[in-house]
Length: 613
Ligand code: VPP
Image (tube, rainbow, N blue to C red):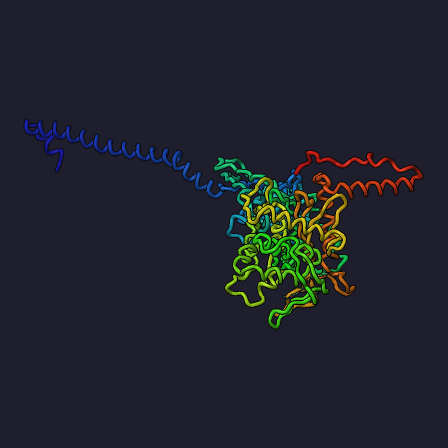
């Protein structure tokens, strides 16, 4: 439409169209201007938007390349013995790592990095190129290293190389306590032993934080803490480091002297079930765990199954006394030293003739045990043994603890009950033997063994206190003249114990190789400690009973128990022999010093002090 036509005409009509035209013109100008203005505003707005808000977005994108959420490792709780002696501690270490993308932009810096880390240039270059598409790699062989070494490398300022704080586990007692403690893996998680059993308690919770790194990969700011690390909790074990050391040392000495293949020792505190010591040989250093010699990692005291042999006899006697079918003075004619059961024969070391119940324990008569068990019905005997802890886990909570084998009576052959009465046809762990003896020593109350100080379980009265105390007194004859365990006698204390020499089952029969046992309780009057010692396969070349439990394991029992009684300030309960020994020592000393022996009253008996229990 030609605008000019209206304007030129000049008539009213034209006037209106002109006004209109102006109006329209103005309108359109405003519209266009407005549109342009809006556009401009939009553009400016977009620019602002880009500059500020999106910038944050692009910045964030940029940051994303440098922003990382890095974990903050939690320090692992310390493990101590019952007196607070450190057994497992975590010390801070550094782990060197690199951002390969960053590092590969500075190939000229690799030689000095290789030199500082002792890596060959091509090994380092290869490692970086293999991860060129990654943002993270550990510098080979530089995990959990000393902060000093890490600092020296970091100070080179090679772009893309950083260090991460971690914790390294350290076991100051090394091989003496390694089976109990176990160890942690490269990620500081428990793998075996107490480290595994209480991993959640010890591990704590790692934290996390966002960090921004500059172009050189150095942390320029800790943007924000996502969550703080929660340190692990400390754990106080029942173990007494001093008794543990003694147990480990004496077990090693016995194995070296007898050429044995292995051994275990368990010391329990009777009143609480706490494990004061648990040692095995062969052992290993849990500060340097290697893949080989897995055999040495086994905590045999809770994993190895063996026939308990004659250490079973006090349990058989207890069952019969509890049932009331015998008394301590009931007599048995064990002549001629063997007893037939079908084609099977149970034999004694020699013909002990007539023995009373106590004598069967004193002399360790297999025949006597067989005669006793025939007075019990199968199910009762089976239930009694199970109540003493055989055929089931002791509940100590130790990872991998074995329950042992106790065949149900429904599967017994004609001779099973007979041979079980003196410890064959069933299998137990050294821990179960110590636990059964602790139950006898605890006046018939069974307590689950525990590795945590103060964590005493609920006692279960599994046999009467009267019978339990009677059997403990019977076992005292074993360590007195005429008994099979006189080498376990301890000056100043009455010792209750039982020796055992069991041929090792092999290929359906029994080899001429042995387990040598000694298990017992001290002091007889209100026993404080129970202990089981097992020596596996002592050398028999010296013949005689030089490989018997009374000869090989009883001395270990004696030395460790003597030490434990002293360390825990247990007052002597056999004052007569204690004073006699003091007088004898004093007389000898006086003779050596050429003086008159001091009056006997002078030797004071150590009274119980408030020593740590
Ligand atoms: S008595 O007390 O330790 O010096 O009888 O392995 O008997 O029937 N040990 N040990 N028996 N088996 N089957 C003896 C002793 C002596 C006794 C004990 C204190 C004088 C000692 C044994 C043991 C034995 C045995 C036999 C040891 C094997 C399995 C049986 C021969 C040494 C038996 C079949 C030589 C089920 O421990």
